[in-house]
Length: 67
Image 1 (cartoon, rainbow, N blue to C red):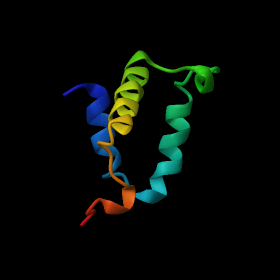
Image 2: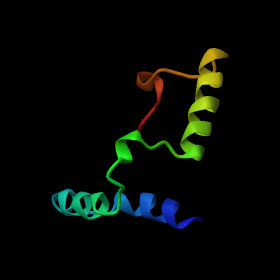
Image 3: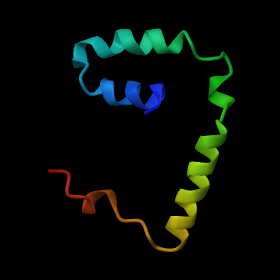
């Protein structure tokens, strides 16, 4: 598992009251122009998602059994 994936998994275990602190720490590592930056893997994930959508392979958020 990548370090990025490990961090993403750990987020769920952080108490809500601590999340603002974590957000500020993460923001310090982002480049100033981060809003204009799209990673290649994000671009690829979006491309694949749009293909699935075009083929009718997606479902509504409300249809997912979240229990």
